[in-house]
Length: 237
Image 1 (cartoon, rainbow, N blue to C red):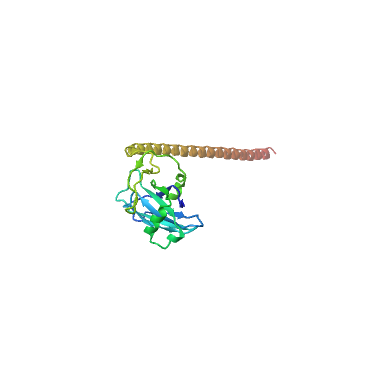
Image 2: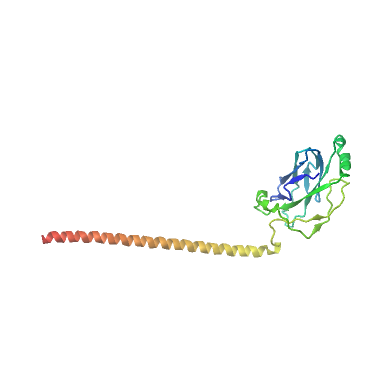
């Protein structure tokens, strides 16, 4: 019986990765209403991650929350992340529930194993796992493979693991100075445009003030002219 895993494809870690509290979690759910399911969680980087629980039993129509704690890096990693987790599961019969887990796993795995892979992603600075949900349905095929062993015990066999990409990592490290220069040029261009807009607004305000001033002068001239005409009329009388 295959377990349902959420998130489905990626487990994303937020930077900085040098802090001591880098954690994530995923949920494994057993939708079957007839059989419990045993599971094991494997990784190709078992010295980098602490997984709790690394194995166990998911009861019928129940779920288990798995916490992944990362061992902090000494320096922020720049390379692509190739780490991943593999959730292996096997259906457990009622007569196997009372035996130790190791024996239960051996007996249950004879009936067939199901596997589900979670690729690790180190998010770019400023990107939170909530904002990376669009990568959940990413079905892009990756050409490289990681041949490292995924293991939590001596009995787990080797298998090839597709690599994962860090998001977003569109440029090589040697291009960073060029990007900085382009960013500086764009910033200067934006400042120039902003200053130009300010000057245009000041010019518009000055033009409006000039129009208002001319209107006031015209009105005052009309008033003075009316007064003068009034005094002239009185003198004639």
